[in-house]
Length: 407
Image (cartoon, rainbow, N blue to C red; front, side):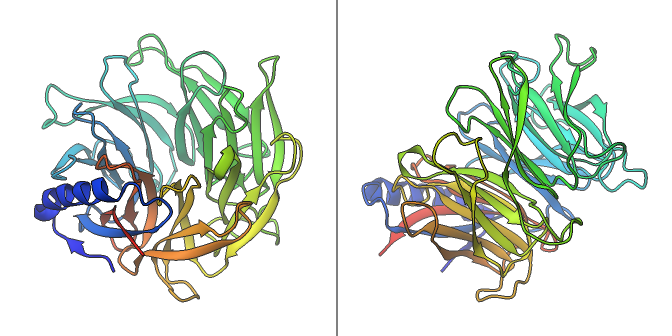
């Protein structure tokens, strides 16, 4: 099904894919087929995270990969690698988020590190480029927070500019992890980054999502933790209101036995949202939550388990892969599962009804990558989202080009 391509052949694949989709853009709703490009066969011992950003300013997203001791970017479309930093942070690097932090019109990166340090320092820093893209970037400190695990940009506090929202995995003091929002200071290299504690009541928080869930023009925060799925919305008074909207996997209230791990928001037709989770943390289940009638934050959403055969589920993405107006759910797991196909790899689920209650599973990559992280976005400008994934035990980075429709 997939065709493994070398880096040297990726430019030709890019052009061929663009021509194929120029012909097939009108055939919305047909199942997509994916061409596999091996971006890097061994980026590091673990590819902890992947993201996309226009690093070189050519209006095309490049691929960025995070390993235990490096951050590497691959230029679109020839995928030539360049090192951003190497051995410049506390090991292990674990998460990354792009944003123009210093306002110079070029992308910078926030980076979470210190993941596997014996003292788990949990360093949070940001990276700014050197005189040329062939030179190492500089590392600037933001803060230190033990167990820092995920970070994303969004104007959660309503200040008018995005904050860096950070969620640690485990608590260090009190009743739960400290979810923090850091504001960019006027001089981000030298001034202190003001922090706001968003919440400190939840535990084993594997990930969070930032975006406008309810369409009111304000950024919302959704967290996935041992206690389930929680929504944080900013009220008319400017304060964040916290509501439980998902129960998570039932079971003993212990990490990796109950609750939720990964979380993303997708959209059905007519703008109806759904939540997609891995449950519990590092778990075997994929669940979709659909909202009740009325406000999205008024009551618990309905939980639908799509699959309970994954091996260490660890990555979730969404995107309208076939152009029919409903986003598909893309899942990656890093261990062999109990189903057929068993994986590990990358799979997508397509809604089989308009309500998001029934879904059908399809293969993108079965066995070629032990997925630790993935991201879904159009990389070749053909209007169809592609998939980028990073591997754990397989150590690799792969691009899956959504290249043609199959009947």
